[in-house]
Each structure stands twice: as structure tokens, then as C-alpha cells.
Image (cartoon, rainbow, N blue to C red; front, side, top):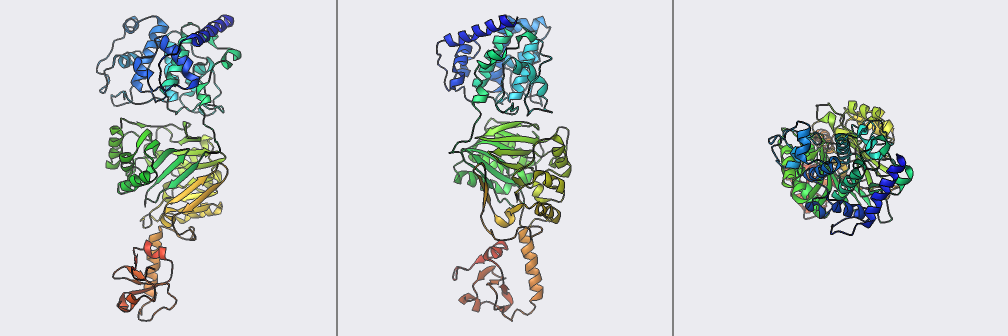
Length: 572
């Protein structure tokens, strides 16, 4: 039987080589021959033959896979339904009445996305496509049980049980380094090649003995593996941790590809718009909204007003808050919907690998289901934990995923409920970044968090003290640059920096009861009435009421952080 299979597969690939070139646009070199063969075999609808390197929609997958089923079974759609006593339900989905979708749903091959919708313009992940191929195989009478795979990144993922057969017979491959990348978005050319290979196997009506020999599999091109991006001397990687006050926002850029992780509060929409514009980022490959809290999703509407997005991730698809509804509204304007990832999903951003570490299914409290992800660039790594709390950190550690990272974006703005000593010990960060408001009322960051980070020797950066924090990596070494206050000890301030300065100011005010006694050691003299500050030698000081004078010892940035403006006459 194996000899017969080898002959059939050899014939299949001789056919691929003999197919004349067809006018398919955008095909990669590795895929061109099989795509041409698929078109000649009548598998590919005409609309799909243009720009095949673009993501494929759910409705287009339904069109092509229904053709696959009809060819593999030798029956038309109506015959298939009739033979199984099935009927089409015209009203099953509120957003499409496409026949291929309704037939595929009736056959149990493809499902909707919830709330009575199919999301015809949405995209499919590699995991979903593997599951659909498995269902089609069973529909045509193939036994898919008993097969295994060796992918290391799908342990505990629902797709693991679906991967044995399609990967064993060579229909779908990994992405290299023993990984499958279940959450990766599928392009049209990849879907076409997978469909063509499925026809080559399913058309033979074999079961377990359709497993290919090693020699035959090695003759096949491996598109996903060939497309694995690798670092080059020209590769670049940087992260901007943006100062959005009491909120989170970070932009990761690798090899010209950009990912936005959260966007601060709604009041920061203009900031997000301006940041993307100033960096000429007109397309975001990914947006990750870690959870629907207003201080994380509020500013994403501003980002979507300037840039298009490829895939938008969040831990939920609906929420009652207005900022989240605005986020969804602007996604819909781009015909995009939210994808909820699962732990173990991974994708590429340029040549960097992004792996989802959390959430787990079943949680309801939004902070507790914050998306946590880890980025690898060369030998350097970066961990983002949203607003995860101590229980979630413990769950992440128990999951077995790698958490060791050079840079830790501290969870929940430095809340006492996160960043436990156990978690920090496991991550072993060389650097930590806290995104926090200067005058927050929560006391963030707390002394416990600062102690845990300090005890591990992490260099700490804070947006309330340092403003925007810029991180770069060459794949081996990580470097940081800050907008301001680079010499301030970031561990010395518990709670927000502006609150700390105001408290210091209040203490000094109580101590300086008689302001008629000038402090000759003061660096600046501030007018508590006009909120301007001056050099002690400025002529404006002489005209100032003594009761309004504050003899300030400290830095210029500290006064600005307190809301004071420099005098335009002496320009301190």
C-alpha cells in the first residue's frame, strides 16, 4: 500500500511540475507551482487568484473548502446534504447568507463566531485551519485518530488533538524550530496550498496508510518553514513605553513591523495618534488590548484613526464600557473584529517571536484574564503582563511556559496585588518598566513591588519619573534611554512621583514658617500664586510678594512636574 501511495504522490508532483503558469498575482516562489496546479484542478475561486499573499477571509475559505469536499466525495453540495438528511438553515447567521458558508455549517465543518454571527470578512488562524481539514477528512471517510505530532508550542492547546493526522500526511507543516504557531494568521496562498495537498491525500480514499514516507515528505516544499523570518545585520528592534499617566501603552517595532500593546485612557487618544504619525506608522500588524479596562483600551480609538491594523487581540470580544465600545467601533470601520488568543499561540513581528502566555479559559474578572505575552528577539526577551495579579502570575508559572526575560513590563502599574517575589525570581529581569501616573490615588508603585524588583537587582524605569522610556535591542544587548530625570533614583519614590513632590513641598512649607527669611542655597524661587519659577537673580523676584515666594531646592524637572512654568525672562 505504501508503494502505491508513493506512486500516487509522485504522480501528483509530476502533475504540479507539468502545469503551465497561470496568472495568479502575489504568489511566493515556494507556492507558485502548487497554486497553479490548484487553479487548474478547479479548486480556487477566481476571486482568490489575485493577491494571494494577503490574509484569507472566512467566507473565501468556505468557498474553497466546499469545492474540496465536493471533489473528494464526488458529490455536489445538495447531494451531500441529502445523503446525511441535513438541510441548510438560511437564518443561522445574521451577517451572511452565502451558500458555501451555510452548507459548510450544516455539515459541521465550520462554525460561527458567536452571537449568531459568522464574521465573513474575519480571518482564520493556523489552528482553526488544521481543525477544519481534520473535519473534512472525517467527513470523507478518513480515520484521523491515532496520529501524533512533535510540535512544542501547542501543549495544552485545544488544537493539539487536531494536528496529528494533517501534519503526519504532510498537508500542513510547522514553522520551524519544532513549532506550529497555532495563532498565526493564514494567507490565501498558504490556504490554497493546504487545500491542494488535502485533495491529493483525500482523493486517494486511504486511511492510516496515507502517511507519507520520510523520503516523499522531504521532496515537498515547506512554505511555513521557508517563511520563518530570521535576523539579519539590517534587523532592528525597539519598544516605546509611552507616558500615558495612570495607564499602559507600549509600541513594539521590529524590522518595520509594529505592534501596539494597550493605548492608555481615552484622554490619550490624541497622544496615540500623534505618536504613530510622528513615527510614520500607518499600519499596525497587531494591536493587543490586554483587557477592556479604560486605562488600557481608551486611547486605541486614536491609534485606529491614524493607522490600519492587521489583527486585533483582546481577552474578550464584548464589554459594557464606552472606551471598549469605541475600540470595537473603529475596528469595525476597518472590517476587523477582535480575536481572543489562547495560551501557547504565537506569531511573528518582523523577525521577533511573540508568544501568548495567558489567559486561561473560564476566568471572569477582567484583570485576572489580562493577556500576558513574551517577545523574543535574538537572545533578548521581553515580558508584558497587563494587569495580571498574583494568582495569575502563579498560574503562568505552573503552565510551564518560559518566563525568564531580560525586560519585565511590571503588571498593574506596580500594584501590591502583582509582581510577587516568586514571580520576579522566576523572570529574573535585568530591567523593569512601570507605567504609572505621577499623581495616582492608588499609591502605585507600592513598596512591596519596589522591594521585590530591587532585591533581584533590576534596573528600574518609571513613566511617572522618566516620561517616555525607549528600549532597543541588537539581539544580544538591551539598552534604554529616557525622556527626563535619568539621574533620579527610581526606587526612592513610593507612589506617584508628582504626589511625592507635592508631599515634599507640603513638608517644606510647614518647616518654612517665616518666608521672609530668604534661603540663599535655593536653586530656584517659585511664585506660589502665578506658578512660575525663576533664578534667584531674576528681576521678577524683587517684584514678588514675600508671602508668595517658595525657595526651592531641587531640579527644574521637579518643578515642572509640580505644575510650575519657567520664567520667560530669566529662562531657568
